[in-house]
Amino acid sequence: MAMNEFEYFLFENFDADVEAANPYNPRNVLGKETDPVITAVANQNIKYQEACTLFGTDLIHRMMDVGVIRCDDTQLRFDCPIFFKEDAATLLCEIEQKSRGLADCLERNISTIRVCCSMIENGFSLEINLYHIICGMIFDGSFFDYLCEKGAVATEREHPSGLNYLSVIYEKCEELQSFSNGLLCSYNRFADATCSLQSFGDADGNRLDFYRLFRCVEQGRIPLNLQEAAKLVTEHKYLNKDIILSEVRCLIKTGFCDSAVQQILEMLGYVENGDLCVPVFLPQHKQVIEAIEQVVEDCLGDVIAKVLIDLANTVKITAVRHGADKLEIANELYHIVFGMINEELVKRNIVAKPALRSGEGRYMKCIVLGGLV
Image (cartoon, rainbow, N blue to C red):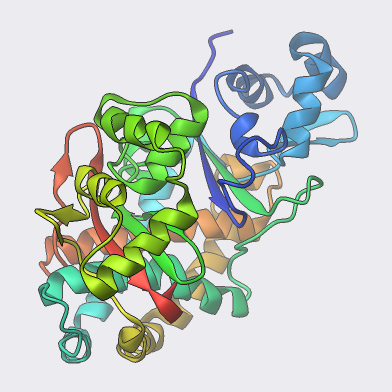
């Protein structure tokens, strides 16, 4: 039997740094070792005992513990949203046209949104600020709360380990590329309660940002573009998250910070020639962002909620056939929906176009402070 390869995506509601070494952290379970099991469940309707014999009881139990597979009587089934090559055409047919219509609706309200956004004076254009606010903070942030209240998506799942997260799996194939890591629907956040160094874009590569840097360092697999920054972190043992974020707050407030922190900020593209070179969103911007959020919610909220509920109950894809949680499926379908809306907003020049960086994908960075985090 030919083995498929898969990409594993996690939406963590836990501190990734604190739980990095936790054996129940799904990042320490899912990968090449689990690809054959996923393939067997998909292709062979494999039973629990047979899977334990083939792949080892320990691996099967760990995959069940992290919520990727479950046992229905004796049969193994997928227990999280999972997408295969044969699902691609259905996804495109069901979602692409709906997303264009949603972008049309938002475009009709863009003059109101631009008036609101013009009140943020941080040295960057309306289009750049709207990229971060609409595409990231709203669609991949506050809008989830709205959809949860409407009963349209799930944003969390507590596992037996006590860790809270959602898992999503995509088969590695050209047909799913535009859904799995080709859409503008992915946040990387390196944050505490009052400061966030973040980037938003697609997931097509290893971004030059703090979240990716620290994940690669902890995994011991450091891509070429992050090696210089990784060396600095390992040489300066005090450069942990708390110190870095504290120094960033100091830099924004005073114009100065620890020299090693400034050096790494330069390496990762948040600082240029000693000055911040990305948008900074401050607590006083919260009211403006909430006003923009209200316009987007009034325009699209009920429509998107209905689209997601309908899709999760009727769309003919693998995850639905296996009985994965419908609200978890709706969560990932929402990522595809708002990712496609974001692509439309970029095409129509409503928001800025993120640059494509070889090996990193398309994304833009910003810093968020205070009550916006």
